[in-house]
Length: 514
Image (cartoon, rainbow, N blue to C red):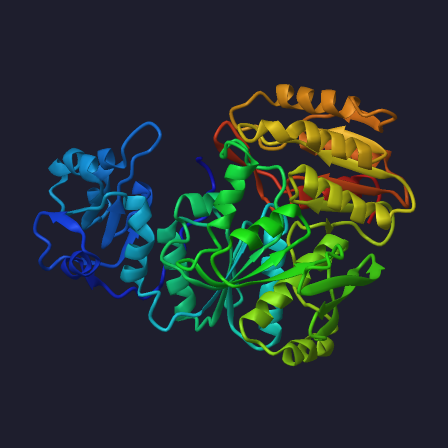
């Protein structure tokens, strides 16, 4: 994708290491003279090569990365890491060649070695699941800071380094980027790192070279079936986080049946949590107060340990995410009394969750929320939370991704139509797909709901949110699902600047709402 892509975050003071020693210590094959060659970084993207890098040439869907070896050399690469086929292609670049059977599978271990991320490593927390990964990561990071740690965070929305905030590229960065990020965090004296781990990250070795101290599983529901053959295949990708080479301990939510499967098939010790009253869970989350500004809950263990606190977002599902975060901390060795004392001192978990049921309207007029949810399950939970605090009508605005899992579109539109009073179907990231065709599929599904809402089609999204605001009255709520924190739309491979938060506020102002 072209356009305004955020840069890779690298350490500011990288210490070069001997390429000869790298090959020797990791048992790799090589071609060419390695003597005196020093490496200070590595990347899989030619345009991101800087002086001292190893360029990692992997086979793509259409071309082999080794075809760009000369470009990498011009940009400052000092060596090429590739496979046997790539070595033949890159032979004329006259750089030393390091050969691995699978460069991508080896990337994490090599990046760990180059960036020394194993030396005095921080504590690592990893979170996977279909929905709630980002929210749980932010909540966990918030509590870590409240108990006094300097933290790092890597999520779909943002990267944080000791309070500095950067825009994210992928949910989980490539292993080379992730280890560079960790090296930068170590420079900032970060002692605990929270990483959102997607299924694709596990499938494509993006977290290789890291062993998590504690990992968490939120839930599993229909999503990403463009990447996985079925739900079992998708589950197996998530299960990969619960293996001894990847993690030491795990915390598993039993709120979906897949949680029980994770427990049954996990190869590491796990503890369990439920917000739906599953009697087999070690920990229970009980909502004690619903409020438009927060959700209060009690976390209780079978051993009688109890923490009562609140998190800053509406919805019982958010209390479930917060409970999971707290149990992950306890499994990591933090004392429940110390956690409870910090939360009581600060009147609950203190964090900001960008684009997660985020209210962007004022005190008067309709409530407007933007949310990143883009699956049927996410729609159901978020709509339920919004309706709970809406005395008037609930208006929903959403579109669906182009060139992504089309099999979930019917259920997305059905859940939306069943849960709102007015539905406005618009565009999201069309990518290379015809947006009108996507809208037509959503409209057909929404209209199949008996006694459904009033339905509108409006494109582009700028007009859709204006329409929603024009239809809204004081006491109504508008949920704009999909864009959340994102600041762009992907239209035919171009990142077009776009902010749902800014557009919603502008539409409210135009309509006379402060």
